Structures are given as C-alpha cells and as structure tokens.
Length: 183
Ligand SMILES: Nc1nc2c(c(=O)[nH]1)N[C@H]1C(S)=C(S)[C@@H](COP(=O)(O)O)O[C@H]1N2
Ligand SMILES: [Mo]
Image 1 (cartoon, rainbow, N blue to C red):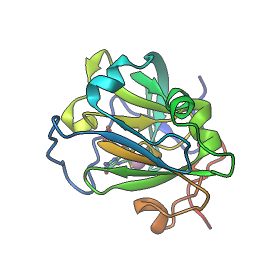
Image 2 (tube, rainbow, N blue to C red):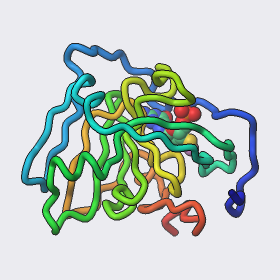
Image 3 (cartoon, rainbow, N blue to C red):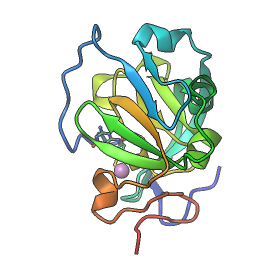
Image 4 (cartoon, rainbow, N blue to C red):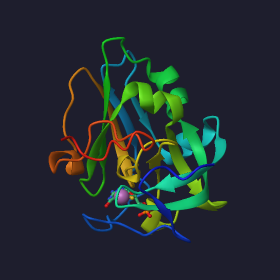
C-alpha cells in the first residue's frame, strides 16, 4: 500500500479526544439511525454484535500528517446498516454525532463504499480511548471523519458542518486527493 501525499508513518495511533472522554452507559447505549430513511433504527450493542461482522486491515491517516500501517478493524459495514434502514434516494450526506458531542459529516457515497462501524481494533474490543463502544472508520478518508463514541447517524439531504469542518476542514476528506481543507 502506498503512502498518500504529505503523510509519514509513525508506529502507533495518537489518541485524540478533543472533547474529552465521555462516560458510557451500556444499558442505555443505542446507535440511532434516522433522517431520510424508510426504517429508523435504534440498535443496542448486542443488536450490533448480531449483524454481519467484517474484518479489514487498513492504513490509517490523520490530516495532521501521520499515518499508521495496517490497523485492523472489525465491525459492521455501513452498507449493512443502510440495507436495514433503507435511506431514500435524495439523501446525500451522513451526519454523525458522538456521545462526547463530537460531530462530523461524510458523503453517503463514500460512507457506503468503505465505511465500517468498528467494534474491535487489532483483535480486541475497542479500548475506551479508541472510541468504545463503537467508532467509524473509512478506508480512504482522513481520520477525523472516523468519529469515536458514535451514537447517531442521520441520513440527510443537506450538508451540515461537523466539529472540524466548521473550522475549515474539508467536506469530503479523501486522503489520496489531499482534501484537507475547504479552501
Ligand atoms: N469523538 C472523537 N472522535 C474522534 C476524534 C476526537 O477528538 N473525538 N478525533 C478524530 C481524529 S482527528 C483522529 S485522527 C482519530 C484518531 O483516532 P484515535 O484517537 O483512536 O487514535 O479520531 C477521530 N475521531
Ligand atoms: Mo486527525
């Protein structure tokens, strides 16, 4: 796998928690899928474990310039979740919200191509600092699109800035095109 432009490898991922480490209550935790869908969903952690799980090994790229080789993720493809929720064809953006109030936004086309709701990383349950109970990862998008502690995915016709997008980071964030900033 080739290193994308402007990136360098480091040995392991740097932990970022710009809004802190949220307290998680697994009894009340639900992943909510709403917005422009025929079937809104409220999935508990055990519901998520019953969905088809996939395992991938991808390089991880942070927009600040570091990359980590071969990180293993295991979880549910966003494609699988979309098959259950049935987004309407006018939905274009996936708005993402986390328990720490972190937000981001991903083009639905990108989300369905390679998005995973990861429950495990490197053969272990996600560690709290890496986003337990669930986080997103995308093969070819910068790391900030991969919200940790994710609890809500809203299929939307409208684009809405998330935390970093509001500060000038890119709407799509494709790594190989160096979509780092909006302008
Ligand atoms: N909730 C939340 N998710 C987040 C972040 C964050 O600060 N809070 N940082 C993002 C950024 S910029 C990167 S590069 C990755 C880093 O993942 P890690 O903290 O598991 O190493 O998480 C992303 N998801
Ligand atoms: Mo990042």
